Length: 378
Image (cartoon, rainbow, N blue to C red):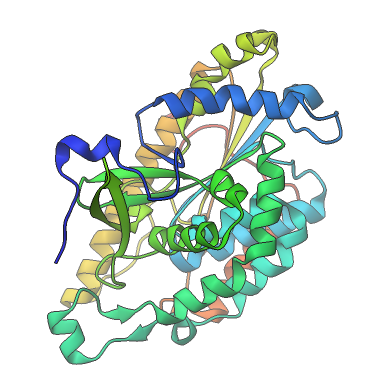
């Protein structure tokens, strides 16, 4: 039996044992404001070699990685090639949703994890990620597939030492965020993964893994992930699924919105703030022609794909407008429409390797980052 959080208590919930580790998209709470000041305190408390940002080079690099399931191989290839090319920055803030939630922690830690990311996206096929439920489970349960194999992969790749490294970077004033969708409230939830990692116990590791799982949990395909929460010592539960249901790519705008006041409080010249945002879309933004077979599953799949692409383009425009209004530098990468996929299954190893190679080659040559959203000039 479920006990969902009542609507009037949605902004008051806490995960038992954890405080101030998440926020609702579009809402700035007291924790968010305080964290902006903490970020600068952490940054300024380090020497120039240890800090990333104003105290170092007067420049912030931000990375936002989209959803896209197996297409995440494209972002992984691009990151690997970017490292080899030599101009990949250390990111002040990294965000990830859906497949981007798996990539984001490794991208946050840097090029030392490039090979591990490559293995994750070029060595596991559909049968090693998902397992079909029995007929009765499908008819009377909440999903078509079991998440047992996916959960095991997440447990293997996100361990204690990894969280310890994330914690170290968090304490330098860097931030890592992952998004999930609360289906009960239809809200996008932003989790502060660096703060969770910094708690440094078994419960924080369990929660970290659970958030990653929730962010990649495609509804109906996989069972929802439930989070136990409480308000005034009364217990409730929340149903979370793929963050891509709400947003395909995101940046917590209050991070930069709060920088101004935080800089003033930290005696830093606000005119010094500069930032460059890199958006990696694990999908197409241009129309891609394909003859759709005349059966229900093909039509449903193509419809969802089209809706997702439209959603992505809208979110790219939001990020572009926000960056432009604050004199930031906008940079966008996506799979070119000239690339024709030949996918035979959801996680097709040959296709994923091809996408990895595409991203790697483009970055190695010096990626031609798009400075505007698609169709803006038209």
